[in-house]
Amino acid sequence: MLRTPLAFPLVALFFITAPQLSAAEPASILLWPQGAPGSEGKTAEEAVEVTRSGERNVTQVHKPSLTPYLPPAGKANGVAIVIAPGGGHSKLCVDHEGHNLARWLADHGTAAFVLKYRLSREEDSTYTLEEHAVGDMQRAIRLVRSRAKEWSIDPAQVGALGFSAGGELAFMAAMQTGEGDSTASDEIERQRARPDFQCLIYPGKSGRIVVAKDMPQAFIVCGYGDRPDIAFGMAEVYLKFKEAGVPAELHIYSAAGHGFGVRDSAAGAVARWPDRLNEWLADCVLKSPRGR
Image (cartoon, rainbow, N blue to C red; front, side, top):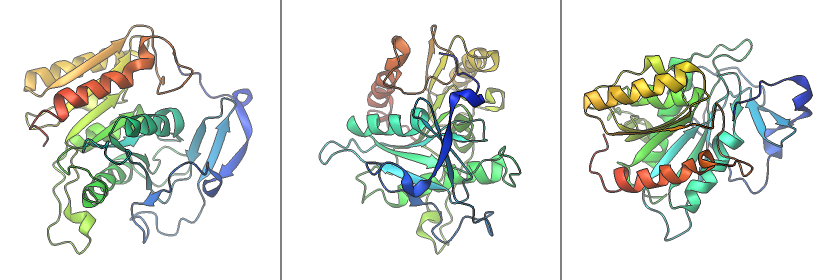
């Protein structure tokens, strides 16, 4: 399904602040409790736009955070995934590209964490993709590893998943070594920031993906009806993984475009792509010694 460009008539004309979100949603965890580097002096509260379909778009993120979805006791498989929603770096589509998948993964035994990262293309933004948005992804991975024992997670099975713009954060984190600082007083900063695997869901800027032999393995999903740099681009990226000898799995859905995400209303084969992800996790993450 092609994403409909946002237009005034399609958006509900009200905003809510973060504390007013659903009580059923787990409490979020600040990545930097004392304030994120680069966000000094920014005090504006997050804004949440609600569309007519009831989905939320978040803006004005100055306190990047994680919302944890942990599997029921006794069901955890030890795998964790940090999920970065898309939104063109000007907003975060946190429901169909975040919380919906996180709930599904937790129900199937995988710990999932929805990342609210800073937006480099929001109006008047002082943030950059490379330093702040990717930095938020790296900090999130470090945070999850630092609490692995508490959350019944294997610290060598922590992955990054991103939709669209969020996919850029996932592969950019995977392209860096992300070594921890063993001398840091902050336990979080001592952890590795490179994901053990990457899940790229119709990611932007596919031409920037450089695959090295030590890069984490990948699961890739996109739609045939997406724009050429994604539909063709991800096929080319898959071949890069193959040439480098890095395991990868690619699904291109013929009846899908951009932004399908995870929705209860979805129909057809593309609606079941999370099942393919779950199968891939079982085949290639849980059974494989390859991580780093």
